Image (cartoon, rainbow, N blue to C red; front, side, top):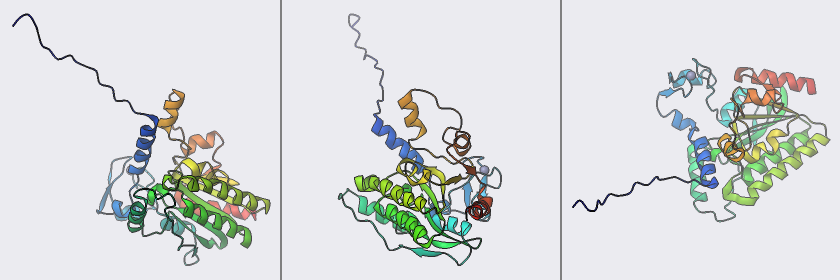
Length: 296
Ligand SMILES: [Zn+2]
């Protein structure tokens, strides 16, 4: 004793995350913000993530899914958005029977798809069809974030392409409401091909001179932003919606700079020319009608 002291050296431990892990965390972050209507409605009360008030869920439903205290916008399902925008009993749905296959035999894809079907009561992450907007006939497709994070696989891309082609053949305006975490990785390159397919269909619509209004809502990112969501003749959104390609954290790490306040939110994007119109949820239908009446 006294000659040696057997003290354990203290080491600093560093957690090193690679870019793939960061991307995954970001994606999870995005998804964890999203709860299906069933999850949100599992109790009678919901806490507003913005003002932290406890809300009675019926109050929220009766207020277009907006917080009555701070006006925070909660997610709307595709069905709720169709009810918001289309005249009662005029919506005719198409292609509801299309379901994806598992072309790459991606592990757990079948199970994940099945659980999304059970959770949302939908066959895929988009509902498409034809209906009247204040008496004006439109072709409409609405994405739903609660279905696998609104990811675009081959069926989502196909249904959106058909909605575009329907607008072209019936010569009626097109409205696409998008919300998405991006392309569906489980279908690999087939998901990415949907970007080219939808963009080509929109180009053909433009050649015919038929108006297309794109409505990316919170959140719209990845391959959907990089294709049809940004190709509208007019791009319309709700206040404070997150719209971008890569998430803010990935950008910050790549360019090693802090991003400005409100980066990738509607108001910032409108100021910088990426968004044309920001409309409140309760005014959305009338704003659309006004825009389409000018176009026709
Ligand atoms: Zn609130």
